[in-house]
Amino acid sequence: MQAVLRWQSDKPDSLFRINADQGNSPIGNYDQIENHRIMQDGKTAVGVYKSLSGAGATDNYLNAMFPDTGSILAKEEQGGWVFVKTGPMYFAFKMIKPYAWYTQSPTDPSNKVKTTTQLHPTAQLSYSYNILRSQADKNGWVLETAGASEYADFAAFKNAVLTGTTVDSSHIDESNPRLIYTNLSGDMLDITFDRASGAYAGTHKVNGQPIDYASFKLFDTPWLQQERGSTTFTATESNERLTYDFGSWTITASDPTVQVPVSGVALGASTLTVGAGKTAALTAVVSPANASNKNVLWSSSAPSVATVGASGTVTGVAPGSAVITATTEDGAFTATAAVTVTAEPLFQDTFAGGPWQLGPVRQHGLGDSGHRAGGRAEGHDDVDRSPTGRDQDVRAALQCDELHDDLRRRVRSVPHAFPVFLEHELLLHGV
View 1 (cartoon, helix red, strand yellow):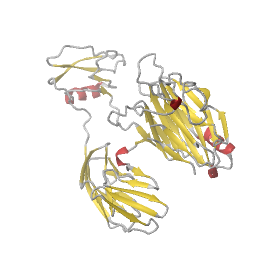
View 2 (cartoon, one colour):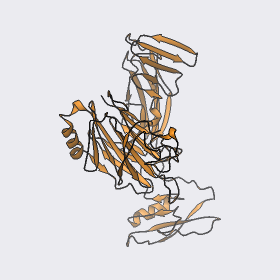
View 3 (cartoon, rainbow, N blue to C red):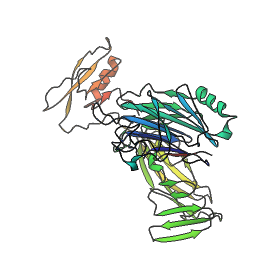
View 4 (spheres, rainbow, N blue to C red):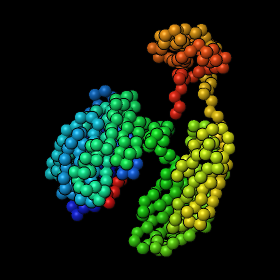
């Protein structure tokens, strides 16, 4: 699903879209989260792209599609940014890799810009677009938005973006493209490419903290609400609210202007174990399902042991015990969970082939004080464990002999390199 920015306009198609080419589909019709990764924080969004096709692929394009229907009042380029004035809001878009401009209208053949598109009348665009198109196996982009009332005029918004934000694209050509952007609010968005089909490893960060996607609601808009794992879904429009309970197969109508008080709160777990430096999620379920104010405040009895974020994400700080409390804004109802923080081991033996033996120590180019700890699995052939060797399951860069001696005493196996580093459809509304 593609990234979409929508604003209010009396002109048709007030819609800006960002997408990656997909096979012979019409330009801008589809996107693929497997190779195009996107994250949003407030009024800012960033994305990274990585082609998963083979060498010589022709589908490694990113498209930024600006409607040419009158819904955009002004569009200017400066400093690698494209600045747009829509009336109720401004936005700025920056493509990381070089790009070129194209135009395509509903009367143009469907393959005018994207030449691999299937030629068919149903594949033609419904509206006219100015299309910013960039071809690269690895790429990225930034989208910054603001309400028009936040700045004196369009020029002030442009100046704020040019002087008050920073884009670090120095890692965009790494194996997994990475993009770091500090936005108009001073928040740093840091995204590293990861496959959507793989396990999330905290590679999407805001101000250094991984985004806790597990705590997100299924629906969280002024009109639609549903908690993750909940059987109730609420739809609100004007003075009518419908609550669908899929557990009992009932629909309850209510007036959203009438406040429904909170009667209680419960946590998804009463106990939780988390490693120091690791995170885990707690979920608060507020009753009744149609309560008007479901906001919950989180607190920790021992922040030096475990902290808790606004969404219920618990972070282990140091070994020990703490009690995490969720308190409803309405009625001050509480629920608690006992948290145990354990020490995380620096090394783990994950080899199934047998015990490891610490082998001879040889210098490896770090100077007189640099050493390498080599190891060999019993029953396995010797392999190249030099710094340039492909198999570096066991490698240690030590800065002094004392550290090396301590390592010899304590380490039976070192399965990873040392030192160890600790560790959507997108819709933005103009106001």
